[in-house]
Amino acid sequence: MVPDPVVYPINEFGPLMKGLVIGGLGIFHVFLAQFAIGGGMLMCYFQWLAQTGRSPHARAFLDSYFRALVLVSFVVGAVTGVAMWFTTIQVSPATIGLMVDEFHWVWATEWTFFALEIVAGYAFYRCGQRLDDRSRMTLLVLYALAGWFSLFWINGILAWQLTPGNWLAAGQEGGGVWAGFFNPSFWPSLFYRTVSAMAIAALVACVVINTIPSLGRAARTALIGRASHFMVPMLLMPLLGAWYVASMPAESRAWIFGGNVTMTMFLNIAVGSTVLVGGYAILGLWRQHLLINGATATLLVVLAFAATAGGEFVREGVRKPYTVRETLYSNAIRPAEVAALRRTGSVTGDPWPVRDPDQYPNDQLRLGFRVYRAQCSVCHTVHGVNALPELTGTWETDQKRLNIAKLQHTKSFMPPFAGTPEELEALVQWLEWTEAGRPNRWNASRDPAVLASIRASLEAAGTAAGGSSSGGKEDQR
Image (tube, rainbow, N blue to C red; front, side, top):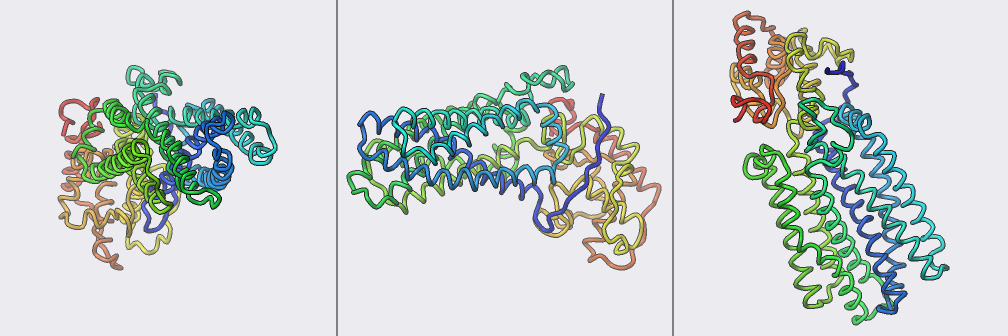
C-alpha cells in the first residue's frame, strides 16, 4: 500500500541547480568527515610511536596535528554537517523523511557515537598535554572508534539508497531495517571509505609536518615516512572499487561505463586522481622515503579532494532516476503513484500558490509552471544550471510532447512523467512560452486531438522506470 503523499513546500535556489547545491556541500563535508575519521586512527598510531620511543618527534607532531583536526573537524565539519541537514530538507524532504522514518534508531545510534567523538576530542584538546601516555591513548582510541563507528552507521544508510537489497521484500518495502542496512554495497563502500579516510589523514599529516618550524629535514623525512604507512592500504583500492561497482545494479553500472558522459567523466577524475595520489604515496613516500615540501603535500591533498568529489558525484548519480532505488524517484514521486497521478494529476492537491501569478498570460501557463515545479525543479532550473527551457529549446512542439510523454525512454535516468495529458500539454506550452521570451499574450492549447495523441504516448511509455530491471523487457533501452 502506497501512503498518501505529503506535499512539501518547494524552495528555489535561483540559477543554481538544487542537486548542485547539495552535491557541492556534500562533497566538502564528506572530505572533512573522512579526514576526521582517518585522523583519529593516525593519531592513535603516532601516540603509540611516541610512548614506545619509536619516534622522538611523534608527540610534537601529534599536538600540532590535533589542533588542525579540531579546527577543521569540530568547527568546519560540524557547520557543514548542520548545513547538509538544513539543505537536504529544503530540497528533498520526502527522501530525508523516508530515511529518518526507516532508520531513526540507526541515526540515534550514530549521533551517540558522534557525541562520544566530540567529548573525547574536546577532553584531549583541553587536557591532553597534561595527561600520561596511557590516558592520552585512551582518549585517542575513544575518539578514533567513535569516528569510525559514525562512518559505519551513516554508510549503511547511504548505501541503502542505491542498493536496498532484501529491504525490498517481494517488491514491497518493509523487508526490515537490518535487511536495508546490511545491503549489497554496504561492505565494499565501508572498506573503501575507510581506506580513503586513512589516505586523506596521512596526506594532511604531510602538510602539517611541513608547518612545524622546530623540525629539521631528517625529522620531517622520518615523520612523513611514518605517515606514509597509512597510505599503503591504497593498494587495495582497485579491488575494493571493483567490488563496489559489482554491487551496483546493472543499469547503474551502465551510466558510469559510457551510458552517461558526465558520470563517466567524473569516474575518470576519481580514478585518475586516486592513481596519481596512490602512485606517489606508494612509490615515492613509502618505498623511496622521499621528503615532500608543503606545496607538494598540499597538491596531493587537492588531488585527494578531486578523487572524493568524483567518487561522490558518481555515487549520487548512479541512483538515478531514484533517490531511494525502486522506492522514491528524484522528484519525490513513488513508482506506485505514477499510474494514479496520470489519472488525477500531479498538482491537483498542490496547495502552494504560484509566485507572481499575473506574469503568466493564462491559466494553462500557470498550470505548466506548477507541473515543472512539482516534477522537474529538483534537477532543473528555469534560467541557470541545467535549465529545462534550454535543454528542450531545440525540440519542436510535437517533439516536446513525445519526448516528455516517453521521458523515461528518452533519457532513462529520468523518472516517467507522472501527470495527465492536460498537465503535459501545459508544461509544453510553458516551455514554449519561456523559450519565446515570456510574451504578454499567449494562446492556450486545448486541441482534443493533441491531448489524445499525448494520452496514447503516455500509455505506450508505461509507468515503469526506463531501463528498470523490474520494468519488463519493453523498458530495456
